[in-house]
Image (cartoon, rainbow, N blue to C red; front, side):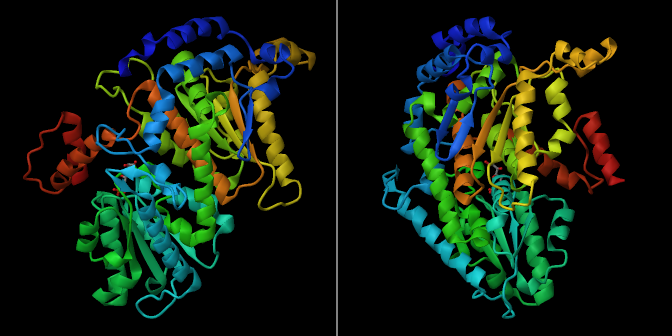
Length: 537
Ligand code: G6Q
C-alpha cells in the first residue's frame, strides 16, 4: 500500500477538489457562512482549536478524512498504542504513549507488560528528585546540591530544555538549571561558569550512552569536578545517568543505582516524559511532573478514541498535508504567544522534521510526493517585529499555528490584553488582508497602494487555552506527536527512525584523525581536502 498514496481515490478526489478551491478566498468563505468561525472548531481537553481560517471547505475535510481512512489511520493508531513493531527499519515498538499510561494499565511488548516498569522508574525518579529538592542529597563534601547541569543532545536535550523553560514558573527557584548539548567547548564552559563543583549535579542523559557530543561533555564534566574535588569517589554523589545502556553507564564510572532507565521503544525525540525528564521533575517536582504525564495521556486517549472529524491531532496532520502536498507549502510556522514557550518551536523542529523528513516509503521506494515541512518559529509578539513581514506580504505560503492563553502566569496590568490582541489580530490580518480598495479609501496615493496591499488568504490555526500548566504542556506536546504520526501514516513513511543523521557522524569520525596528522593523505573531494588543510593551519 505504501507507495500508492497518489493513486488512492481520496487523493485523486483531493486533486480535483484542489483545482476547484485553490483560488477561493477566506474572505468569501467567511462571507458565505456566518457560522464558519464556530463550525471549524474543536473545543476539547481545555484546548480551543480554531481551524476556520484555513483554505478548506467541509468537502475538503471530508476528502482528507477519507484519505486518512483509505490509508488505514485507525488501524495504524491501534498498532502504535498496542506495541506492534511499527518502527520496521529498527524492528522496534513505538510506545511513548506507555510512558504516560496510568498505573494498572497493560501494554505488552514481547510478552511483557511494560507499564509496571515505567512506574517503577517514575517512583525512583520521584525519590531522587525529592532528595535534591529537599536538600537531603548531599554532594561529596556534604554540601547541598544547588545546580543541576543536564548533559545530552538532540532528544536528550531539546525536550528537557523546552520543558524547563515552559514550566519555569512552577520550578523550585533556589535550584539553578543549565543544559549542555553542543560539542563546542564554549557550551560546557558557559554552562559551568560560576558554579561551585561541590554544589553541582551532572545528569548525563543519553539513550545509547555512546553519543560523541554527550560522552565528550560528560568526560569533561568529570574532569572539571575531579580537579576541584580532588577525589575519584566524588563522581558517585555528583553524577547520575539517564540511559538504556547499563553497561556503558557503569564503564563511565556511574553507579548503576544512580541510573534511571528507559527502553528501546522510546525514541529520543519522544522521550521528554521518560527518565530523560529527570531535570524537569527536579525543577517542578514529582506532582507537577505527574500532572504533565496526565496531560499527555489525556491527549493520547483523545487521539486514540475520538472520531477523526473532531480529533485535534488528526485534523492538524491533515491540514499540514493539505498545504504541503497540494499548495506546495514548504514550511510551517509555530508562533507561541507565551514567552515561556520560547523553546517550543525548536523542540517541534526535531519532533516533526526528524520524524517526517523521509524520502522513501516503508517499502523502500521513493515517495514521489512532498513529505515533512520545515518547522520554525519564535514567540509573539517578538516575531511580529522581525519575520512576519514575509508571512504577510512575501511570495511563499506559510501556514501558522498560533498558541495563546487567556490568563498570564504573571498578570501585569495590560500586558496580557496587548499580547492576546496581537495574536488574534495576526490571524485576522493573515486571513483577510487589506485590499487595494480599502487602502485607497485611506487616501494612500496610487503608486503606494500595491505596497500597502495585504493579499490575505494566508492560513492559520489558533490554539487557545486558559493558562500554561504542566498538564497543558503535556497535551500540547502529545498533540504535535500525534499530528506527526498522522502525516507519517498517510505518507507511508517511517516517522520513528533517523538514518539521515548518520552519514555526517560517520564522516566526522573519519575527519577527526586527519585534522592534526599531517602524514595522513587526504582522499576527499578538493573542497573538503582544502577545508581540512585550512584547519590544520
Ligand atoms: C532522536 C534522535 C537523536 C538522539 C540524540 C541523542 O530521536 O535519535 O536526536 O536523541 O542523537 O542520542 P542519545 O540519547 O543516545 O545520546
